[in-house]
Length: 262
Image 1 (cartoon, helix red, strand yellow):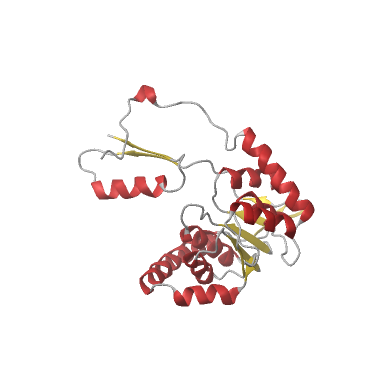
Image 2: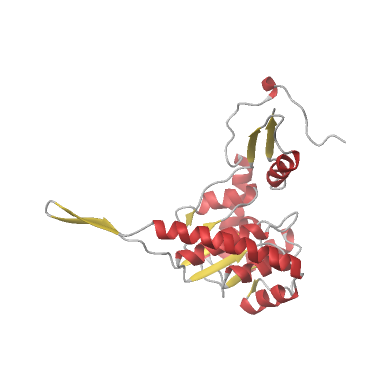
């Protein structure tokens, strides 16, 4: 079975694609606006339509639910998450330590800058095809290290491993929905759920479209399109490492483009 398609250089498209297609942006705008106007009722309706959400399921979960998921997690999975979390936290702390306040004398006075964390960070973690707890760790831990007072994780389905990762990362709340309605929820809030100041994390086209639409209402990290990766390798490369790197990007999205050039 051939997993990689062999192509010639002239077959590679040089077209620059927008982060979000116009049609997706148009439909996402309808979702975002309905959540902004109707709040919780709209979030529940979209959760039932897109997230396999049952009417009796909770929309948000607290720290206790995250802790229970962590306690019930397979010990091997728990250890893997803990190791990853420690590495992410060390790096995030090193980044934070590298950013320092500055004050200097200038003619007529002083100039400078201060470093202040935002109050509330919303961290999105995809889980449409399978959960990505790594996204929880890389966003929520960074927010905690930065000093955010409130850290929210949003992910559809509330998968146990995602909840456990949120516990490890020190999240305060878990929003059990995904897609454009999750982004709108974090941007505008709804009954019983306060809005966030910034929204970060990867997602599909609907998530990216919603982030584009709410940018300015809240801060966002970036508009991330489908993953692209180009590996240059020769006969000395380790095949297992190449495969792992390619698969790590391919799993992000069916439109991801991991490439190996030999």
